[in-house]
Length: 262
Image (cartoon, rainbow, N blue to C red; front, side, top):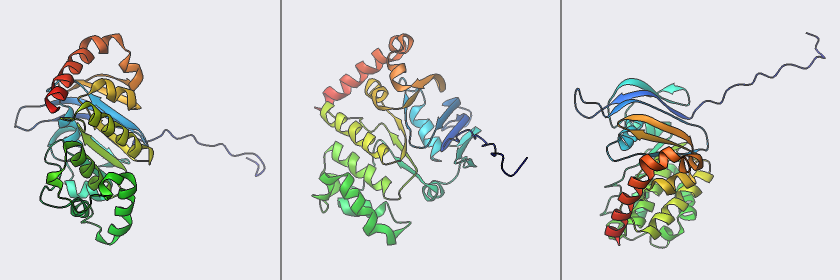
């Protein structure tokens, strides 16, 4: 080839930031909750995971974060195999996790909770906490208040902010709207999208399936530990089979829980 001829540009397929490939996992020996789940999340995406109770949604998230033993399959982070890696190692590599319950230190202040989120990089505390105050201004005004005295929605914001202190590339959210009133649920979804727009890839398990499908880029529907459907969120929200099999039942469950929260 002449030096004056244009070089061919090699087009590379984008690689998922986090990938779960055919995962089999469970809590007890011989009993699997996940039976071959697959998930891809690309840079900057907001991925939703929905499905009926007991489908394995939270188990999948915990398997990604090393909290549930994976018996078969693999998890990769930026192409690196991190299957069953310790959680502290995953945090160092850029994975944040917000559990559904017990996600704050109730006896500590909001500011102290955020400080706990950066225990691996204490020298970066001043700069990182200023970014959290910008993202969660309602927390900045009450930074000295004990986390245990906050409402459910406020505690959820503290938990998210603490997970973001390490500046993760991937944030795993386990049912962030669970137990919240409809108004607080909307606030949580708006906040989740704002976080995503800062460049953080988010994988979110969510009980409010309709709202989740409205805001996510792509979603996975799990049933009995397996992938039942996947695709763009809004397409799944309008898919007759998904509506018939899942959305009606899930919506009824959400309404009951929201009524109990009020």
